[in-house]
Length: 190
Image 1 (cartoon, rainbow, N blue to C red):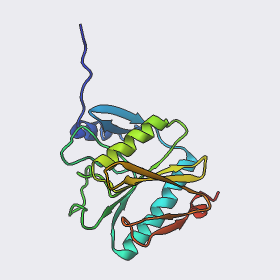
Image 2 (cartoon, rainbow, N blue to C red):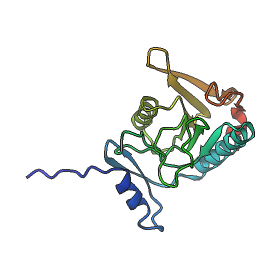
Image 3 (tube, rainbow, N blue to C red):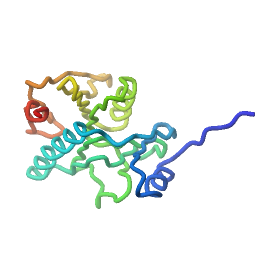
């Protein structure tokens, strides 16, 4: 007898995530598969707060859009995939009004994933592909151990273009957050 694995959707995930407030786990969905995430460590949390703060202040002062941390985003036509980037930005032009209490029905313009010790390259590449294939314009993969950020975006031929910014470089918001620049040594300082 073949047992079928259950296919989850965003409504299942919402219910599961809010069933037990004492459960510290977070969940994501990829193609209906439930991904269980454990709480991040201290350095991860520190980098997440710093980057969120820099982006949020810039976006608010420039009136560019909404910055979130750990919020769930899903493609509007796909109820079986939901990612929760560590930090995200949605432009004012694309942000739903009012901004949803539940999951956001689009992928952010900028998605930031901070790599934890347990993440594999395959997992990171898979998420990057999902973001860029579903509307994100820019993805930053923060590598704390190497003190660098990998920057991904679509190129003219719809391929993926990557560049790396090291601790001595300046990270740019490019055309997604025009004018945003962050000296990475500020992000990675102890």
